[in-house]
Image (cartoon, one colour):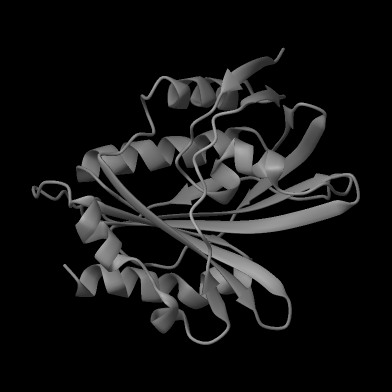
Length: 229
């Protein structure tokens, strides 16, 4: 059974069903994956959430990334109807996002870049701030939901995307860590996105994009959050 839900996920790439739907027209689903979460120590921070301005100061910029990176203009948030097929838990998560509960953290900031090295690739960073407990519970719920459905489909209009996800080992950074590799395909195209989330006290760092770029810049993102505190 499936139904249409209004999704408003704030998380980029794989966690945003709309992004997955809009992301390509491509291949039959490749054999891939299953998502999950890695956790470290669960330190609680008593401090109040950082402001959006404070989070923006902690985002990566071109000088942090090096040559070949261009900042992408921010696009207006989309709230389109999508249908989730084959994953009831993800359907429920979509409904929750639509009603504003479950995935809304108090403060957020986001930046995306294209990399024009050997080929065009993208990497994005999102920062969220809220209580440590709320950040931990919210992001864990998303990753665990993805893990509960090794494969499923999402549809928007006539576009259907096949999605598979797998757990990826997360580096031992921050207080808690989660990482996953998402493979999605439609028609003859296939796309792979890595998404890694690191919680540092009352700040959540999420870096998404081409696996090589995420691995290359994740530590920089975490270090900049810590350095600017």
